[in-house]
Length: 254
Image (cartoon, rainbow, N blue to C red; front, top):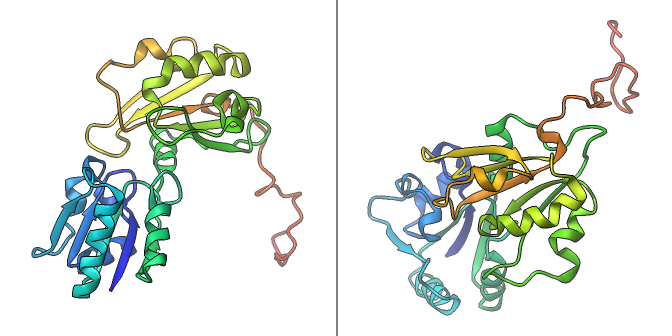
């Protein structure tokens, strides 16, 4: 018996990885993280699969389901939105599985910031503008933030930011970011990226609050950075004819 942790991507069923789909197809039990998982993703479960919503379960209850499945020798597809490497609560589940000697696998998914980059057609690291992407969030009802990772500390770098789980703190974000990025810094707010309900709001730190409907309260990503509007950046070295590649053999055309 194995628990398969699967990142199902930003939402659209055709952005689920082939590996993830195959594991879901053959798992007799599917446990998914509530409304964050599209119903179309759940359609990949076997017709006779036991499907359980973990949104209202605590960690002990989830563990209980793992143990029941282990006794019956039934694999579980454990579905989480986006990619499992960030804010998935996979860590504490794996810690328990290892303690109980229950086998598990991890299958990555397309993270929301990557899907957002594709939707707006912007590279988030441009030469001479920003070569770093900070994935972060703000304080809220979720786990506490280390003081060294408060939003103003991250802002000191001037790097592109992909800010998760923070739309309800937008006014706080704007106040903290303006001193470092300036009022005219471009911002993109993306709601339910890749899903039919997808909405994109673009503006600056100075006006973005006025552009977001009050109905947008969850499932939202905020991208901040000069890369969103800059065309005045240098070409990367990757395709420069002057770039010396260590292992590339010269051809007759070079």
